[in-house]
Amino acid sequence: MKNKQWMLRAVGVISALALGLGGLAACGNSSSAESKNGRVYYLNKKAEEQSTWVKLGKAFEKETGIPVQIQTGGTDYDSTLRSELSKKAAPTMFQADGPSFMSSFKKYAKDLSNSDIYKQLDKNYKNRVLTNDEGKPIAIPYATESYGIIYNKALLKKYFDASWSTVKSAEDINNFKALKTVADEIQAHKDEIGVKGAFSSAGLDTSSAFRYNFHLPSVPLYYEYADDGVDMTKVPSSVKGTYVKKMKNIFDLYIKDSTVEPSSLSGKTMDDSIAEFATGQAVFFQDGVWAYNQIKGQSVSDNDLGVFPIYIGAKGEENQGLNQVISNYWCVNSKVSEKDQQATEKFLNWLVTSDTALKAISQDMGLVSPFKGFDNEKYQVTNPLVVVNREYQKAGKTDVISVPTVSHQWEQNLGSAELNYAQGNGSWDDVVKVFTNDWASEYKLAYGE
Image (cartoon, rainbow, N blue to C red):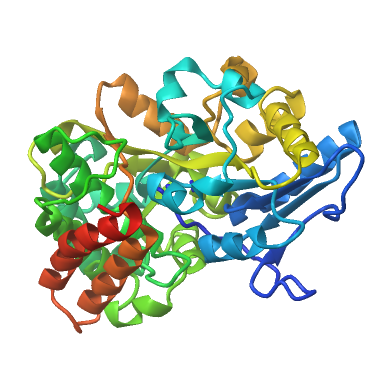
């Protein structure tokens, strides 16, 4: 999932909220009215997990008597959150996705130094919290996720078994050159394989663009930061774009060896892309472990799910593992009443200590969560995409750390440049300019330096 990384994920069906909330999707299970025990109102960013969050809210409310309201923020979470925070019955708890997000919302985030949720955080993740100007923790990471190029083993076997295929095993697909060979040959023989394209559609509408304006750029940024010794948990004032031309390698595969023509990408959604992969119309699909809930139960069996790293042609990528992202953080709204803050902190602690929540988060949501309670074997995630990530790590492959971007505006600008390039209305040089020039200007806007 959902990521700064850090990520904009609005998948699944979201119903429009009546009563004047406009684009806000409402799936709350209680009113936001005050109670003697305080209240909890969580504005959830991950729409694909909404139904599970509603169930958890009901269970907590039944157990404690504290009313819980769970709502999703639609496709523009930042805008929705900004609007909701201005209201009298504002969210008591919200989601952050990285440093650039917190630069805009940190005034609303409570110091959680003495909270139970901070104490429950695994010691190895204490240095991954987001902090205020005094260095106090104000955003607690609640999920670590991995992503890469998900593939269908059964369809790939059809390719390996073909007399015309050059590459004969998944083990040989450990660099960009090999991946391109496979994708190009599948595209050329798509009817024989029985697919519409090698890759599912690289949708560049708002529900899907995060895969290419946030997830994909993390690969060239990782390699640049590694070369230059840049701290991967911080946002630098500028980037050189050393590997952006190599990012073009994989982006070209996505848009050319695809189920659709590049001209249609602006209208292709996340749901379209998932459906194409899940129903066997494509062999490859760039996304993360969070996509499993949308893939399972369709034509691709769990045993046929694999994941390749996102190869771009960088030196040494044969030893590369999957991208690792922490883009999901919990914050408590410091502007609501003390009673509501206490109720919200109680809810947060319940989420990482109660059997009900531990099971739901690990098994229903499939999240790998960095709290002590999840160490128990029965709360280990069985998501097959998570299992693949563990295998890469056990094999000693190097994790690609998904680094924070400078701002959501930078991501949107990058996505627009990518779309223009895909549709033939712009050049890759325009993408490079956004990558570097817009980064520097956005940094000055966000950090005033």
